[in-house]
Length: 297
Image: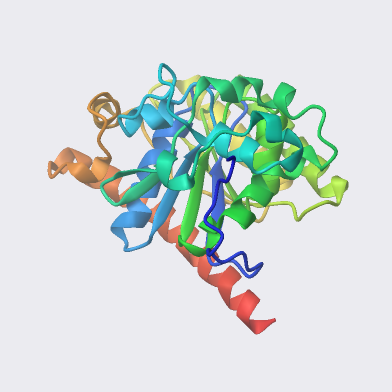
C-alpha cells in the first residue's frame, strides 16, 4: 500500500498555505506552548490551521490530548517515510486522514517515538534528505487545504530540524533570557546561513524572536535580555522582537489542562490572549505579503 495522499488532491506548486515553524535548539524555552497557543490564535482569527508535531517527545501532541508514543497507530513519521519511493519496504498503509486529529478547529499530525530514528531511516536514500518534509507537504495536497501550517520542532539542530527549515517560509524563535539561550541563538542563525549556502531551497525568514518565561525581578535576567536584544539587532535586523511573555501561572495551568489560553474567560488570561493574538497577526500580515508577491509575479 504505502499511499499517503489522495491522488485527486492538487499538487500545484503555487501553494496557498504558509509554513511557519517554532524553533530553538535549546529545550525548556516554552516552544511547544507557544506553537499550540499561536496556532489556536490563528484559528480564532478565522484561519484554517494545521499543526505538525515533529518532536519525538511529542509534547505538542500531548497538548492535543493525543499520545502516539505508546500506540501502534500511525503518525507523521510514517507519512514522511511513505513519501520516499526508495523506502518502499518500510511503507505502511497510512493515509493522511488516518493520522489527522482535530481539536477546537485546529488540525494536528501527531508525533511518535519513531521520529527519533528518522535520520538513520533515511540515511541511504539518494534524494536530498534535507527536502523530505518539503516534498511531502508539496505532494500530499496539504498546502492546498490550509491557510497556515505550524510546525513544532525538536530542540536540536539535526536532520529533522534541517528538514523543517527547508520546508518553512517563516520561523519564530522563542527563547529564555539567559546565557545558554544567547549562545543557542547564535548557533541557530549559523544553521540558517548553512541552509542558504546549500542553495537547494530558499532560506526561511525569521519573523520574530519571543522572550519567554521572563522574570524581570531577577536583575541578571533583565541584563541578559537586553544583551540578547542588542545582539539580535546585528544578527537578524529584519526580525521583530516581541513583547516578553512573563512567567505566568496561566500558561502552566492551560498546559496542565490541555487547553489554549482562548479556552478561558477569566481576566487573568486577557493579556496572554492579546499577546498570542499579536503573534497570529504578525504571521498573518507576513502571509498576506507573501501571497500578494506570488500573485504579482
